[in-house]
Every structure is written in C-alpha cells, then in structure tokens.
Image (tube, rainbow, N blue to C red):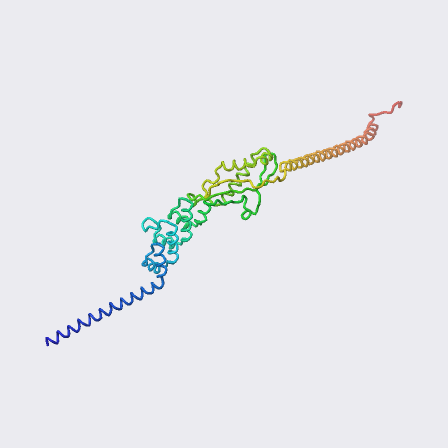
Length: 332
C-alpha cells in the first residue's frame, strides 16, 4: 500500500511538471510567434533606424502599435533629425516619446522636424518646444521659418482680399493719388503665437500711406519724393503685436487721379448758385404777392370811393328835403 502511494505521488508530480513544461513551451511558442510577427512588420523599419542612429528601440515600435501611432512617421522624423545633426538625446533632445506626444496631440511631425532643420541651417533660435507650440497653435511653423530666411512680399492693397488694386488718398490741395505699395516682411517667431496676421499688416500699412499722403500740402510733394511716404509709415512701428517684422515698404506705383478738391468746390458753387436762385425766386414770389395785395387794396379803395361818390347825391337830396340846403338866387 505504501509503495502504491509513493507511485501515485510520483505520477502526479510527473504530470504536474509535464503540464508545466507544456505550458511554458506554449508561452514561449506564443511569444516567439508574437515577436516573429512584429519582426516581420517592423524589423526593416527598426533596422533602418538603427543604421541611421535614430535611437528608436524595437519595444518603442511595439508600443506605438498599441498606442495607435504610425511608427513610420516617427522613425522618418527621427531619421531626419539625426541626419541633420539635431539633438536626439532621450533626456534633453528630440526623444521618441516627445515626437510621439506631438503625433498624439494632432501635430504635423514632419513639418516640425523640417522647420527645426531649416532653423538650424539658418542659425535661427528655435527649439523643439517652441516649434511644437507654434504647430499646435495652428500656424505653419515651416512656412514661418522659411519666411524668416526668405522675406515675403505682400501687395498693399491685396487684390485677392479686397478686390482693389490701388489705394486712394487725397492730398491737402484736393488732388487724388492712387498708390500701390509692396511690403516686405519676415516672420517674428517670438510673436508668432497670438500675433496679428497679414491682413492686419496690410490694413495698417494702407492706413499709414493714406495718412502720409493726406498730410502732404500738394500731390506734387508725393510725386517728387515717394520714399518720404515709406519713411513716415516705417517710423510708426506698424508691425507691433503682429507675427511679422516689416523689412521695407516700397511704393511700386503712383497715379494721379481726379481733382477731388476742385470737383467739391464746383459742386459747392453749384449748390450755392441753386440756393441763391431759390432765395431770389422766393423774393420774387413775395414781391409779386405784395404787388397783388397792393392792387387789391387799390381796387378796394376805388370801390369805397365810388360808394362815397354815390352817397353824395343822396345826401344832397336829403338836405333839400330837410331844408338844410337852398339853391343860390332862390328867395326862399
């Protein structure tokens, strides 16, 4: 009996170790298949990152799969950063986790990395955090860096926005000048977030040009020296609180328009003439009315005279009857 008990315990122990080994083998096989699938899926991508020094671990690629991150975008960005010599240190530089965070926040990862590379080449002070902030704020950070390197030329006014090709301004002598200006601006990265856009710059420059022309005594001063307008406008600091820095303002074209002052004076003279005519007509009508009134009074007085003359014979007859009147030579 004792021997049978030892045998049963030995059999149970063998079965336990058998199933334990079988389970371990299954786990190893499952893990191997899992790893094999990911090696097939991301092996080439990881090897490329490894060969270029992009510092992207294979576990990071597996984690990207579960975090719904496109690993190709992250690896391409890290390869671009490493190839351009940007700092990709895991603690202080452009780490894989920071690039993933930008991707998960909805940022444009390739655009941000390209902007950083362009800024580094142009010796512009732009770090990863500021570039991410600009991108997540809805601004095109790459275009901003390019505009800092290669200034942009803006038409003032912009026919695409306002539908007008020239600005209309009037000098003090009343002559209209039609002006078209070109404004050269570069991006101000310090004020790009929250700074005013191109529309504000165009509006301010247009206002400054109109004010400068309006303060000129004659239009000839502007035609003789157009750059005085540019100097006056630049001196006003119109790029304050905007996302741009005005490099220069150039008057591209100046055309003489209508003599608004003379036209207004002619219109005023015509209006004064009409007022004078109306007043003269009023006085004439009043004179005619007075004349008619006087004629009516004359007719009335004549009528009264006729009535008075008609009463004379009646009075004489009454006097005869009453004996108050006698005929000369009559003895009675």
